[in-house]
Amino acid sequence: MSEQEKNEAVETTTTSEDLREKVVAAIKTVYDPEIPVDVLELGLIYEINVYPVNNVYVLMTLTSPSCPSAEVIPGEVEQKIKEIEGINDVKIELTFDPPYTQDMMSEAAKLELGFM
Image 1 (cartoon, helix red, strand yellow):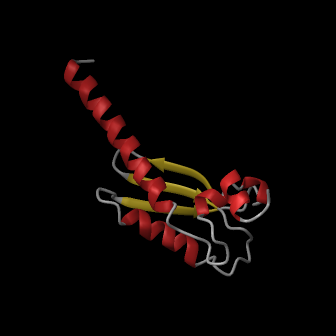
Image 2 (cartoon, one colour):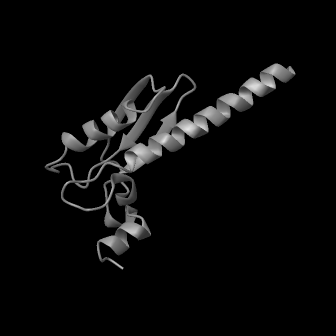
């Protein structure tokens, strides 16, 4: 690998990491309308992938399949990510496997909601 290729690889990695941090920050601005905690802290985000061409894939769930915000939350997550400069495409996939439980919440979310 040439020196230029090494530098480009490092630059791409750094850019991907920076972009991933921006994606995480954007997701943290999305709240379940019924719970005063963001969807990341609630444990609704299972996976975040940022691909080299700045496409983002998010695998997420909802607190229940019959969640009244089932249409709103994934759309808001997608919109917030699309607002990040440099993002090409965003794919949000909903899953209920594994089913959501309160154990998936961060300690901060449990504290906020009085579960600890």
